[in-house]
Image 1 (cartoon, rainbow, N blue to C red):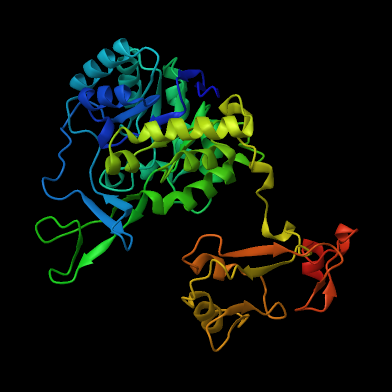
Image 2 (cartoon, rainbow, N blue to C red; image 1 turned 60 degrees about the vertical axis):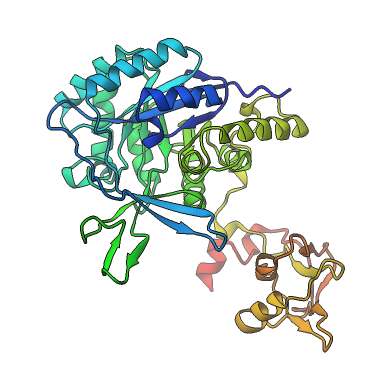
Length: 433
């Protein structure tokens, strides 16, 4: 049996599935239910410093994007950090860690960008027995307007400065949670490393407005006739999150920085994809909010079965395994040629491939009078659009032409460039042209 035991920056947990800092980890009751369901760890919902209380709205806090079958694709939330007293949270964190010593308990923190504020909160968190802290440099709404959250995460110098303060004032591992609301994710990751961060986690939520009430003419969720931007999460953000994880993992300056992957993880396969791109573990929020805490049981069994099938004994065996295959466009092999193939036995003759290709692509799919659809190889550029619009899985596939075969579109034989200096994707060749 595959061993799912995870060790992330020295923090051990029975599996790599943690709950992200969010409403599901806001109190002891929830976290206990999560651990009973099987979660390997939690990042406690973000704590702030003692002072004026945090006040959340009492109206709707979530907006949503749905698929055609009303499956939840994305959530937009305008909820702030915990509005429960600091001492209450600290007392509950201590009790949970005492009763679940084998589970990871990391505490998310957000206080003003002042050294004294961080110096004050770190010792009281450390006293709870928590395994580590996660610095929330990503929240895009509410707290950012107060100079915290993404207001810090968008300035690499601030990230480095605050991270260094924390490393100097705690024995606990320090994880820096990064905002995706930035042009180049590598810059804040590099800043976190310079500050001494033990790891980074990403992505935090994406700045967003999900919908507008066209009767009230206000963004939703709507509070007394007004709306605001919020943080977007859920399955829809997964592609953005995976790209950012890969960018950090393959960047020479940050390749050795452990990554906790976050963003739209719903199944074991999602988790495996993040980990293959370089994440040492994963954090989940929207899936738990959609399906309940027991969704982790499918993740655990699914990942374990897949690892057994592949011969992976531990998660470390495949973490980062896909990272070397992430490259820049200019290094892609232009000699790799594929063509679409339609399986006539599986085709339901809906015509979606034909409509898509005829109207918006390369007119490479032909339709006979009796609605039989075939591919004209002389026009097919292998864009893969037909595969993606076909409602029948694996009805349309892409066949790779072997070296020496003739590409009917170009009339040339498929070959290899023996000399990289002559390859059309070589930057020097591109520049010369």
